[in-house]
Image 1 (cartoon, rainbow, N blue to C red):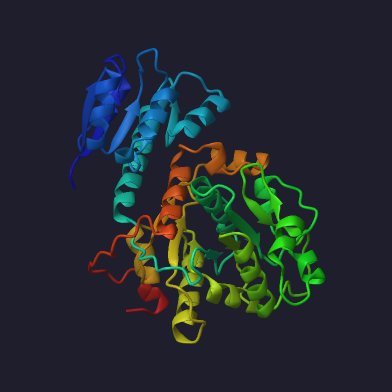
Image 2 (image 1 turned 90 degrees about the vertical axis):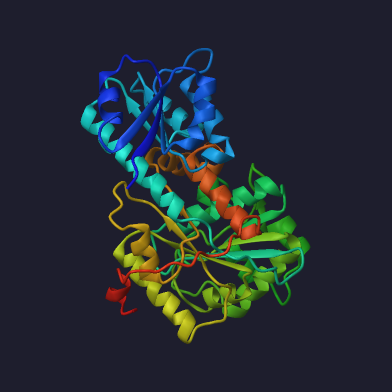
Length: 403
């Protein structure tokens, strides 16, 4: 394996940085001029911001680097002198992948650089590989997000992707909460709708009028996204039939040109009908055995006796600090390419959950937000390279019974 190429912006005053960043297996280049640093950054695997010459700040340079297309995949480690949590959040929102506080502990620095390098290598392996077909309804697109296992972040992905599409097409996106157990889309966006999909099911008769949907049941959030909120509480009664789901989604597509629907993790007629109606199906999975097993079984169901749906786009939501399954493990287990992975940061996501401001809105230059933007590009057909042909080892697929 080639040496990890590390680019350091700083002076020669830190012995710990010199020792760890220049250890065997790593090649460190030190630059003190910020302009030269920005130009050299694309040729490296990890960039470290230590001493940023004024008038720039560390946050300024994070934003500048993260805005460059050539640096989308290159991780940024920012070093700060304060242990203030808000300062760390500001750096993460500006685009840093990780933040360390002075004084530097050598073992911690070594571990964090190793983790960032591993993330960079994985990101190069998991390139988008989904071919996007034309929509079934000219000028209209229905994107369905589903996971065969709960707790993997399907709602988080749905809301952030809707915001990413909305950034491209203002006032032309609706996100629909069709989860059966007290949907959380409204909570993620911090809105308080007067009516929900449950009210729509009770009130509607026959065809659903686009005008009534726009004026009565859809709630517009501060960022311009229309929301059809989920039922406010759990119920033992089915949310809707398959016919109701089809009727609702078709009605929404006549009211709003782009509809993102959160289907949750329970499989029923509602989900099947929604998946069959969708132009794009996104399956969210976490990098752990239970989620992979559930997804594998669901894909088998689709291929053997299930509904005819669009080729699924697989999204890995990385919710663990330590990743024990490699990209090869995940792809071998599912027998499919992963379109994109969403890196996790506990501070950003905790803040998003508590404030009702999704990561794409609160930290638009952060790594997770940039991945949501890339996923939106894939789904809209802006980025659809042909899948690479490569040999695969048996891996976890053998456990699932696949050769």
